[in-house]
Amino acid sequence: MGDFSFVFDISILATSCYSRAINVSLTPELERWIEAKVKSGLYQTNSKVVREALRAMREREEKIAAIREKLDEAEADIQAGRVVPAEQLFDFIKSEVERHKQKV
Image (cartoon, rainbow, N blue to C red; front, top):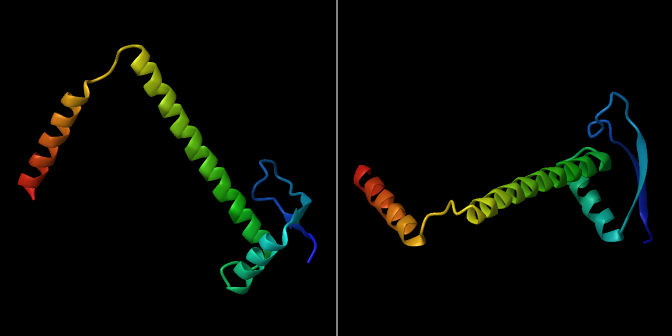
């Protein structure tokens, strides 16, 4: 099969008020995957499949960045000595579980 290329409108992804078409080369496997999504009726066009995939990738990257930020904060807390001994944490969790069981 060769590379599959198509042009799609990235206006939804653009931060400015204009849209721009770009060419994308895909592997045959990705071509079949995109075509299957369109044939299934989930998407109307190849472009919509690609835009959704890019949105999902952006969301995943944002979530990863947020997790990394939390890890950096945790590391700073550890370095500054703002920690709770594990045994104390486990005791707290156990008491919360017991308290919750009593309510149910």
